[in-house]
Length: 169
Image: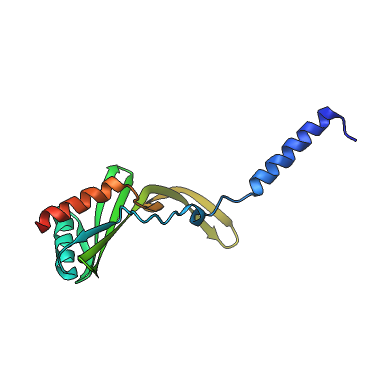
């Protein structure tokens, strides 16, 4: 049996190893599927008319329409909060028939980008002599996607639907 002073570090190491091996809880386990949703709005208009109003709402706020058909609209808007960061906000509106006219479903996806740079040095290889590394460097910068998430803020959707309702009146 190990003395108590030597047993504590062994237990601590085993605990750290077990913590490092455990995987995070899957996200789908926290999905609640609530009947009240911020992603839904109702309109008395027919689906093509409701989607046209939704398209006008997005256009009025500077969104570029990616794709549009009578019952779905997809728009995007670009933001640059810092010189080396970019954000794209994609909004999809789907207009489906309901017993009162139309139900509008909205979904917004926020994609974050950061400017990343890499440098390369130049090397030359000459047969019989060997290789020589030259001090010239080339820096490349590119926006790299660093994250993406569905916007779940109910206030965001309230503002969107309030604008659609105001344009529908």
